[in-house]
Structures are given as C-alpha cells and as structure tokens.
Figure 1 (cartoon, one colour):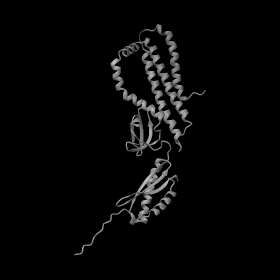
Figure 2 (cartoon, helix red, strand yellow; figure 1 turned 120 degrees about the vertical axis):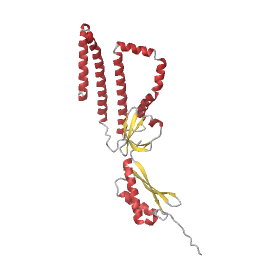
Figure 3 (cartoon, helix red, strand yellow; figure 1 turned 180 degrees about the horizontal axis):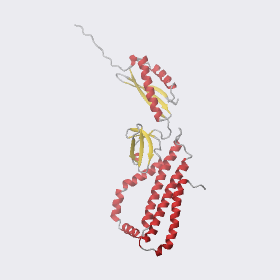
Figure 4 (tube, helix red, strand yellow; figure 1 turned 180 degrees about the vertical axis):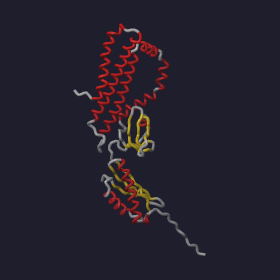
Length: 305
C-alpha cells in the first residue's frame, strides 16, 4: 500500500519517539536529576506525533475523496454539497483530535492529573457559571455541524445576506465567509444563518430569472418592444433560451411600467444579461420612439381678455 508523502514525516517521527520510549523505560531507573524528566517529555512528544499524524491523515483522506468531484464544472451542485460536508466534518474531526491530544498530555503527568481531579471534584457553581458563559460558543459549534448536514447553503452558493450579494467562499465551525460582488468579504457567525432569513439563489440549481423594469409614456408600442426584446436575446449568448417575457405591470399617472423577465444559467450571467437588455431597450426607445420616453404633460388654458 502506498503511503502519502505528507504522512512519511509524522509517521517516522512518531516511530522514532516510540523506540526512544522503550529505551528510556529500561534506563530510567538509573537516571537522576534532570534526566528523570526525559521519559515524561518523550510521552508528550509521542502524543503530539500521533495528533500530528491524525491531522495530516484527515486532510489526505478529504483530498483523496474529493478527487472524484470537480467543483469547477458548470453543473457542480453535487460536488459543492460534498465539499461543504467534508470541509466541516474535517474541522470537527481536527477539533476532537486536538481536544483529546491536549487531554492526554494533561493526564500524562501525575501532579497535573491530581490537580485536575481536585478541580473537577470542586467544580460545583464554577462549572455552572462556565457552562452559561460558554453557551454561545457551544451553540456556534453546533450550528456549524447543523450546516454541514442540513446544508441551507453550500460552498460557492450565490446568496444575499444583510442586503449584500455574493458567494459562499468559506465555511468554518464558528463563522462563514461570504465573498461579495466587489471582492469584499462579509464574515458572519454560523448561528446567523440558522436564526435569520437570507436568500440562496443556487439552492437547488444555478439557473435564475432576472427582471428589468422599463418606464415609458402611454404612447409606446408594446408589440414593437416585444419584437425588439426577441431580437436582443437572440443576439446574446447570455440568455439560456428558457424564459423571455415582457408584461405591463403598472400604469401610473405619468408613466407605464413594463417588466421584462429573462433567464440565465447562473446569477452572475443573469446580472450581465439584465444590464445588457436594459441598455439595448433604452437605446431602442431613444432611436425609434423618442416621443414615448417618460414625459410630463402640461395643459395651458388661453385666457381671453
């Protein structure tokens, strides 16, 4: 069986420390002074070596499993689901490994173990106080695990949070990083996504419908606008050829509101398509129907003197 190159160093280090442990056990009775601390120090180093090996192992296992899933493909819904679960599960596993490693180091010393037992025996009220103070932190960790399995969002999902639009860039046990459209990063606690509503534009699929509103005078020809919309969409690769609608959605005292619905393969493309359609429709009105642009009518009554 081939051993990953990343595992060679931690495995070799741990093996050498274990061999040294057997040697120290035989010679420890003849040592005095500072040499008596070599055996406990060696035990701590062995624990660190095992923890190091396990941490590297979880990273290798995750990378090997994810080789079967390409997140950079167009249809990457399943891949993003697996990436999200494995990333969070790896962080949970690493947290548990580190926790047990620290615990083993503490109980490996007799004096520290006795102090720890005494502290646990007299925990009482202090334990309750610590429990209340750690409640939020524990809740955040549990929220991270919930997100891994319930998956209200996944890596690279397009979301709208706090009025900002962006993509899920990083999911950790205690916080989530959202990469906004202008390359800023919005960092939110994991509990935010379980307690507050947010928009997920790619929850089940990446395709999305975008809307464009055009305001004109009552004299505009809606049939000609629909013909122009057809022509615009047929000349751009941004449109996925699924949805194209122009409807009059409002008639106000001065203008008529027309809503255009167009579909695209994902949210960034939908944004570009909306901008393109809006620009071309305005140019069409300026060129062919300048008299149908929004205007204010004023009637002047001639007064005979």
